[in-house]
Amino acid sequence: MIRNARMGDVKKIHSLLNYFAAKELLLSRSISALYDQLRDFKVFVDDKDEILGVCSLHITWEDLAEIRSLAVKEDAQGRKIGAKLVRCCLEEARDLDILNVFTLTYQPEFFRKQGFVDIDKRDLPHKIWSDCLNCHKFPDCDEEALQCTVSDVIPERVSGA
Image (cartoon, rainbow, N blue to C red; front, side):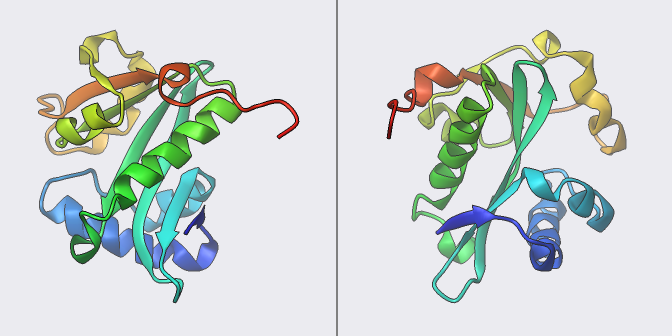
């Protein structure tokens, strides 16, 4: 089940993200940043409410948002949890009338399977680089940039449904 993240999830989300950050597969997030941006996060939980995966939709501009902090516990990978989290974030983007969603990732093939296409990082607004300033790889980022047009990936809601 996917649900909005809650205050009690922050330390578990932090632990999961930092596990993958230590492997240099994503950018770490501080506890403070997680509390500040908690509304951005969705979690995938099992029937015992254990967090198996997490993903964030971060609005960056009028018609642009970023999918970030996507992580799925290693023993839960291969069960489409990541794809379901991304789809949930794209549905939220659609509901907010956000036209485009991008990601910076070390897993470009995963995002291509979700309907994203490669783009040049230089085409993204400068505003998105604020988090990158805290990364030890800045300015030599080796993540790949991908983007999707939300309406191409997520169908419009049916009126009255």
